[in-house]
Image (cartoon, rainbow, N blue to C red; front, top):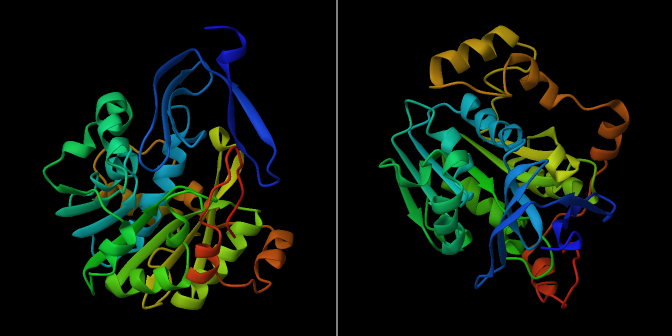
Length: 315
């Protein structure tokens, strides 16, 4: 391998600037039915899974993303017996869900079976074999079609999808129509969270306001993920809105709930980092709270064709 090929594109920031990182070994590179799939070793980031050239999982800091994505809604759910993960074929969000003793069944829904197969083979030291758990049923189908058939069924729905980019497989999973299906699939007392792209991006603001128009009250969260080169955003909702069951400032209660409910050690999330994930500076809050145009199926469908060698946000 030449020195040139050892350098790869890492990701885009919120301004669509490229970042680079070094690659020491390419373990797998192929085109699936839906996207380009790569597994790499990096001196800086360790074992990495990439989809369409963008890091989805990096050994260096994936736990910051996945612990925020999973434990924030599950700690605030009324029950934790039946969970759905939409996307997340790498198994890392699933690893965190399975740390809850109460969880009886998890439906993991990913449209790309190759992501699941490859993750079972190459990412075991990250996902800890979660994809083979007896508590898990894997559905290789479209998440929208799957969730539309569920009514008042899940205690929590965790959405761990690829970004809404032109030609990607997830563009119809960020619309108002889709979030209504998610709300219908939740049981009363249930929680929902979606990854929502870079926290300061236009896309985050539009996802936030789209969710807000369905769930009425929504909560923005963020955590810095170095391997994404950005402060990463999430949007969480509760059905119905009764306020958070654990307030961010209740440090001890967060730590006590983690000790009571979670089996095993968390590397990032505790009472203080839980608070930090909810904190938004005044200038960012002022921008976020300006109403944004909601995302609809019609808008997403207009932009589903991918031009060769292009990368554009759909919204």
